[in-house]
Image (cartoon, rainbow over all chains, first blue to last red; front, side):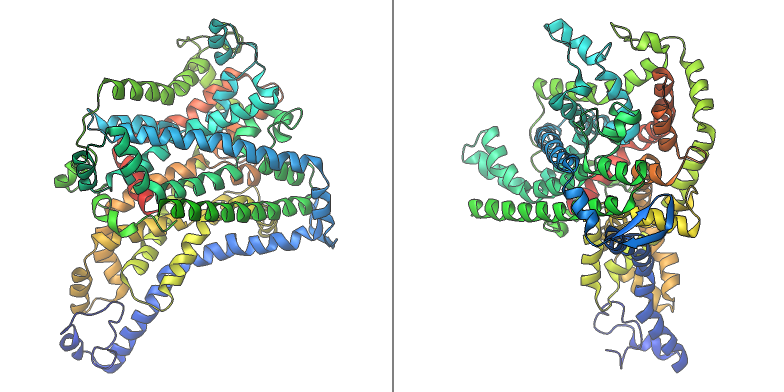
Length: 330
Length: 305
């Protein structure tokens, strides 16, 4: 290719391509062109890799180095080798394990209902509707709301005294719940914020996948006498399986990162330790508290590595579950 | 993640944001499974969910328009009161909001502009140019999506302090100048929307690669760039975790200012709500105007994700 059609190798030229056109150019010019074609794609993707290398990959490896050193917020340029002390420190800290458990529990009780509701919602939005764009935009408004705003509003809604939710509940004979201070109620409150913000977004993802399901599948199903519910279970859900797995992965990664919600639910010092009994302390809060409140960056970096290990574990579980799902489908 | 049958769905969804393609407007209506009309139950359910989506924001407005004593009183206020202006002013002064908003516009603006430029370039290279290692590099780009920022904030903070960027806007702008999602989004769009014939014709005319980018790729990519721009802007505007660590009260973004307003020792809740309102209104406005495009963009980017 390179001998007859100088340069222009950036794509596959169709037969009888640009050969005659490029003959006009002198050799140095065609050499320049060839260089242009060889180098340009790399130049175009370089910014991404440079930025990711400098602010993503390098810090990720650097985290490993810090985790093995004593680095204090008060003297960032000083470090001292401590081996695995930081890891030992956090692994022996019961607060760390509380944070692991909390992250896991909040992750499950926020992801599962969220995705189930989103699935149902997508199904409704997939009907022929009046003002369909309006509905889609409305359910997406929480997505436009920042973590901070959402957490602060819900903090008021979940207030023990004079909170909106307790006021509503008192009509049903309840309403004395101290949401922020309860072991479970505080986790539920955090989850509600997460669910509120992300359900609409996930519904749109499912909706997009549903619209990609070929119509003839539904036609064939209805000819076979399948009810709407059967069509949903036997046609829609199997077709959505990859998308569902995708949203599970994304939501899982997201729940590993929960920070703003627990920080602001009760605010102040309670926020930075995840509640009076650490009842809603997530791993991100634990990392923040160790590194930025207590000023010990070594253990904070060790927490980051622990998060990486957990993520890999979750990825493994996801992979296994995916395999089982595929097997059971076959 | 890539198993989401990327190629199949692209033709339907990629042109979704095209404002300049009126013929495509009806594509959702002929979509699969849309043959059924929504019944009354469907609308009731949608109204309930819709109210649930909007009510917390409405209540932000209500809480921001009373004084704190009234907000915390039982029964709580359900309709707006008369202190909105007073609370907005108080929040504006207490939380350094004027500076915060200017900062946020700078940060979100820089990130959006850079993301659009770099992601379009990279997306074009991945979609239409042939080069060694393309497949592996694209996989690498997607893999970076799964790394949460938490894993690298500690060294990032130390690096920023090293360069002298701690507390400065550079520290929150540079790490997010270009993102994997944007690269992927632009690639998927350009795969479909930019015919090889156009690039070829430009080459026959003797155009250099950068000229082709300028004269052929950018015009073709414009609809997708608009959507990516809005998604990026929303995200940059709302970003909380890293800005909260990197910036301080002297030089905050709006989210950081809001976080600190509520973290003060005795936060006045109605003023905090007024601050929340100020921080949210610009984005709500963007949503009201461009809701359709944003919805289309999320749906287009999502299936392929």
